[in-house]
Image 1 (cartoon, helix red, strand yellow):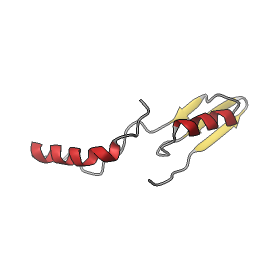
Image 2 (cartoon, one colour):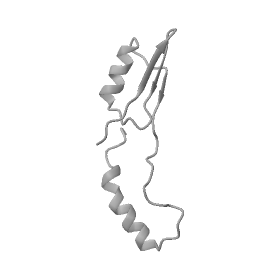
Image 3 (cartoon, one colour):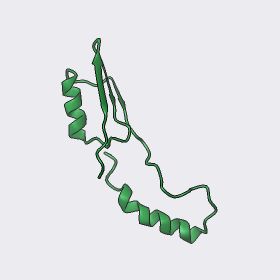
Image 4 (cartoon, one colour):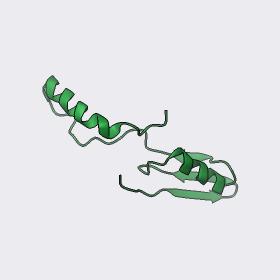
Length: 81
């Protein structure tokens, strides 16, 4: 899994953690909050994964299911909840 960076800014009593595409663990987010005094005011995260296959093309239904099934293992485990 590639490692991607994130940005943590804390100034004037406010904090922001920008982690889009960073795939932060819960522990990493907690550590970032602790670095800012125990709280994050804003946390930007990726809510949907980009897809590698063109979703606007007119594939037959069976091929759409095959592509989705092949891609499912890559997407599992990315959400916290």
